[in-house]
Image 1 (cartoon, rainbow, N blue to C red):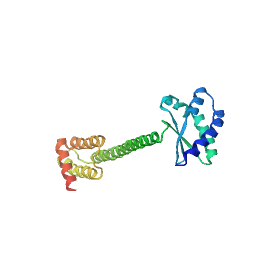
Image 2 (tube, one colour; image 1 turned 90 degrees about the vertical axis):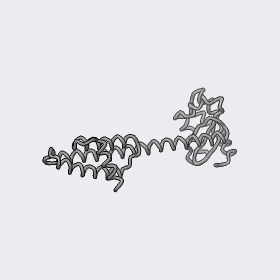
Image 3 (cartoon, rainbow, N blue to C red; image 1 turned 30 degrees about the vertical axis):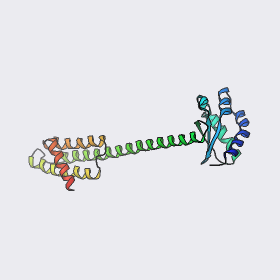
Length: 205
């Protein structure tokens, strides 16, 4: 973080030029009420007093952001990214950074979960398709011994998939159950029995 006294002075000197580039009473009021709070990692953090928080939207307008970043960047001889916060103290910026980190973690968690669900769904969909294709290719599949051999092979396929793709969410659980139901349908066996054999095989593996 750079010396805030120097940043405040640079803001004071640049503000008239910034105001010349933008229009609107609300925009001008917001700019005049703004206080430089921090300057770190190429971010210029401008804060507004809590009583003026309704003015924050004016500072986030594209033309205002462009004027501030361009002119303050020129003044400080570096690339500037504007950040607008509610409050004018360093503690307000610390609170905002904590909020941003929490939001980032929540977003990353959501992305990770979505990615896992997609991968799980794709994997179990492939297993389901494999079960279907294998059964469709069987000759004499009406014979019990043929269905029995299919059952043993299908149990092995699903048990292996279960080892490679553990059940971690509701979507994977439903797709896993769908595969078990498909085997049960083809072999005319109770689905719970199919599940028991698959689970037993996966534990042995």
